[in-house]
Image (cartoon, rainbow, N blue to C red; front, side):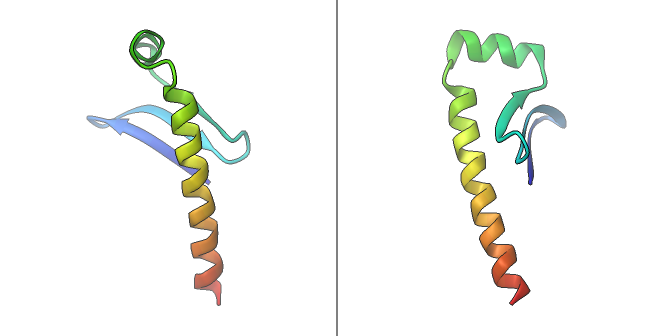
Length: 64
């Protein structure tokens, strides 16, 4: 499972189920989150993990 965050067509972050972590892809995002929102990565990782679990359940249902 992969979730990608985009702003104006530019990838700013991604979550990958193998690592279960959100990773920032833009230097300006790292500067912003360090200064303005230090909990961003933890919060986004939690949200993406929840989305992953919902997606897995939906796939299971669709297979039936």
